[in-house]
Amino acid sequence: MSTTVWYFLRPGPGELQPLARKAFDAFTSGEVSLPSDEDGYVRYVELVVRLENRQATKLISVRFFRMRTLADGHVDPEHAFEIMAAAGGVMSGAVASVEPLPGVVNAEHRFAERRLRNLSRWEPAKADTSALHELVNRRAKATLC
Picture (cartoon, rainbow, N blue to C red):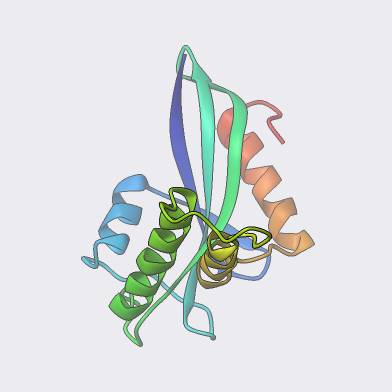
């Protein structure tokens, strides 16, 4: 038993297409561009899939991410830095070394989680989830979702 990650690019509402991991890695490292929406974001879906005998058997997680791009479709480095900074805030809040004052709840990490979610996630419409179900089940040659 093993796991793998599948990526799907969302070029427009209700449109999804498979995205090779190598192409995804080249995009996130800034080597290549991808088509962005009219609002300047590349939206993609990341699925973690359990494999048994190299066959997909279960969806472990499904996440809907977005990455802001420059006009030429390359990753906007400022946006990538904002996401990393927000992720760092989530992590530092989870391991806070300062004891909160009595009666005060330390919620910094919750605000950082919300900021990270707002910077890097998108909510799929029904057309997006329908297209995703069809693509995933076709690729898996089974009903996973």
